[in-house]
Image (cartoon, rainbow, N blue to C red):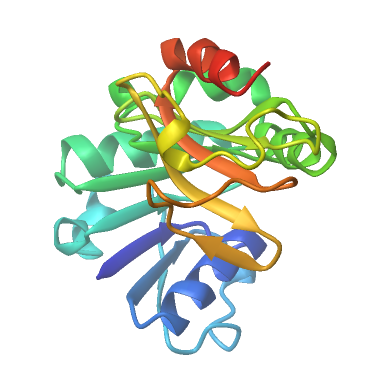
Amino acid sequence: MRVAIAGAGNVGRSIAAELVENGHQVLLVEQRRSMLKPERVPEAEWMLADACELESLQQAALETCDVTVAATGDDKVNLVVSLLAKTEFAVPRVVARVNRAENEWLFNQEWGVDVSVSKPRLLAALVEEAVSVGDLVRLMTFRQSQANLVEFTLAANNPLVGSTVDDLQLPGDAALVAILRGARVIAPTPADTLEAKDELVFVCNEEAEDTIRTVLGR
């Protein structure tokens, strides 16, 4: 997979290093010469250019990329990069970093964004996930489908403890995709028994969340 990343700051370089390690081809596009540090991710391609300029993206052959990541620290730049990647180069998947929570509503398909990653929202969700037992916590939203990734930790006194996955009467627009049990990640089957402190991970639409709360006894 070929991935173009706009922004070679700490975030962009970290993403690049992870993708390279996983065997992907990565291009980092950065307009500030001081941020060009090829020695940090030597396996990646590096390009000194303004990712908001159409000519720069043409030189980067963005149309050959499977994914574009707008990872700069400026939301305006990330929106422009996303829009150009989707509308001018038909990049199949565009992921954008949201730096300021009040701008999150802009990062949608109209701006070419398939998936947005909001640092404030993600941090808040991780805090909730770490301390919440017996509450449904939304971890992230998949912009293209408008589905949510949500998590629920079973308290010891939850009546579902000891029942099976098959006993969960989930709505049609919801699916249990994983059970996190200690260090284990379990792909659920109907016969799996639910245990206290299990973290149940669901994908569902927003309307189904209330039904899931009811099913889980909240």
